[in-house]
Image (cartoon, rainbow, N blue to C red):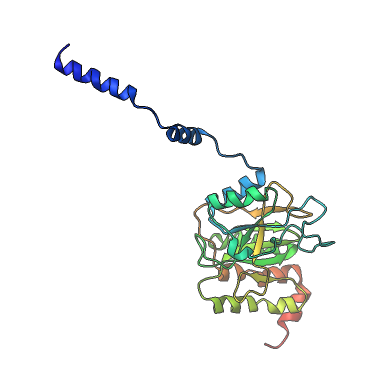
Length: 256
């Protein structure tokens, strides 16, 4: 055997003689192992985190009849968060969402409002009764720049919007809807500061999220910025006028 051949033989012998550390083989097995399977609700939550980057928190579990909070005839059935620092604990990354929903696999998925998110300086929502909401959807469909995601559930339609950077300005925007609320129409702005309304909206998932369920009236488009509050709020005067003309006339007849 030549000197060069001997060196190659020795190198092959050395490589085969080196033991493989047990930790390396264990790590390889862990890398090859598939992630622990989750339920459909948890998978939906992770999908929202990946696609939208919105902060999420679990709601009280529901079974189609009762809310896990224990309140009889709960008015926020399946649409309010578990007690504790839910606003602080809300998470927006798939890894954290997986950890949270592993502990409460069937909990409804709520998005927390009032925070910056991809495509919005401050995530907020305009919430309207179903009739007014449907009229607003028809008007917004004709304005592509103002059209954005909307959630239909619990007798209300929630329009997700960008409230902008200024907290005081957002509070002023919320106050602009007070005239309708004083007249008995449940029109509200959620996510404005200081928080006067529940700062969360339930998102559609495969499980129970309410007695009548929650669905997308308009699905979110990946990578598209949310419409501004002003662009969406602009149609609600007309929406109220078309659905409740007498109420609209009485409110508009009041002195400013």
